[in-house]
Amino acid sequence: MVAILPTMYELAEVQAILKYKSKWSVYRLCREGLLGHVEVTPRHYLVPEPELERYLEARSRGIVVQKTRTKKPA
Image (cartoon, rainbow, N blue to C red; front, side, top):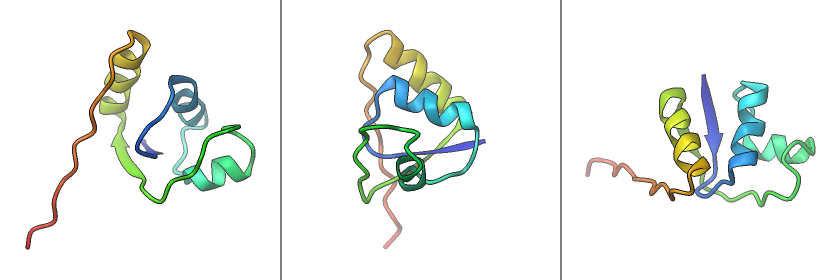
């Protein structure tokens, strides 16, 4: 499973995506009213499930997880 996340996410909002376990875009989740007040940003990240579980665990303990970006080869 892959969840699509914008750059910053609150724990409850990440869990909302996990609940549906789909590849819906954040835009569609917001449009359908599933994520409430979430602001849609142009940047989305594909987060593999194991990484998402670690992210959720860290966020639940109040640890801010720094996202890393991969650069395209020149």
